Length: 607
Image (cartoon, rainbow, N blue to C red):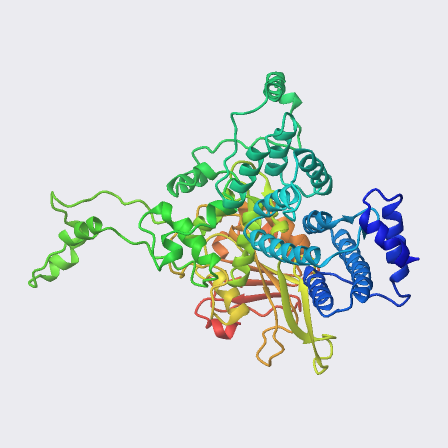
């Protein structure tokens, strides 16, 4: 039956039920065995290459027709399987490109077969065109999605085997097919371009030129050539808007008060970050190639400091906080001009030199140096959520403490940027049961944001001679790295303006070694500033901490300090009081409430 029907079907294009009969003939050729699945274009191209070779090696004319029928059936099934795979994987661009090319040689996507038996030239065209198109598509896809989609559309409407001309009617049908196939993945620029042409008479040459310019990277949006109806609609929307009254504002969308004459305002203005406040600094403002990313450079002015810090941090430089301010030649010459070069000087002149000023001496007061943590917190207040999450991951890799509670400089609220901790993971080794330390070690890797671990909180009353941040660094890493920034760090100054009331957090993760300070993962929090002035932060830490450590001097133990200490003493959690002004203290009789003297005490002995 097949040999009787095939010659007539081949000769007559108007043969009744031609597609149905071809489908039946192809199905009858398939064997019942499970076919090998085709899941990429290279597999299909291999099948087409083998088909070309098989036709070339078949000599008798009678056998050649049988081979063509068999190969047509195999190629049709391979195309069907690949289209099915593309649909399952939502690869609509690749699917559209494949169907645009295979339709030229007579493939029907509805019947999943070819309308006629494939001949050698058609197989050559299908193989070469598919190979070339997919290679070009992959290259453009690596550059941008916009270019790859433009290529898919222009290929879809212009591809031909050079034996037939693509008429405007055919192009319109092809474009309609492509828009239907790509409607869920089409980018806005491509969609607007196609809509602009579809609203009126399509000038195909102009459309093809626009698509070519997108592929070449020379495309410019035509903002002037908009329809009158579109402009009228937009104007109507704008005219209907009116400013909302205070009663109409949603409480969930508070308006950020403007910066006033506050310490935060002074720091942000000095760093020239005011255009980015609040939360307006984005990834595109930071991920730039500048002098700090190209070569080793130090800032020469205040406004260079934040971006120099960010560039070093994004390169995972653990010395990112050790930024040296580079003075200008004029400042150096000015300071050197006041230095006497004579060797002869009396003791009275030497001792009294600080009180003697000449008329030409520059006695102007230089602006106070910036505390480096003020720079980091200024960046925090100016960064949007996505940028700060990115910065947090870099701070974590560099083993720096992270802000946990941050007072908002414009309001009285306390921010908890826990969302920025979501990508952070930690690994540690410890015994599965803490009661049995001889048990084999077990490795843990977890998202630190959602893993419950004990928390040790450090706070201080007033100004103390001992640095609690240095004590914490000794516990975390034996002072090998400044996880918590302290008074002796490079770039530190007497007063920090933006760190007051900030709570920082870091984690100790044991490695399973004998010299581990602790046998489990522990979080350490550090309340910056005088705890007596930050009641909200203290109450939060009292509810969440497992152990509380207070560094104090007896002179600062006023009524507020005693009230906080009363809560700590009455809490079931252990309490350690470190007296910075005491040399000796009487040993108490309570196991979980301990007092220790810090004055003249070796820190290694304390730790």
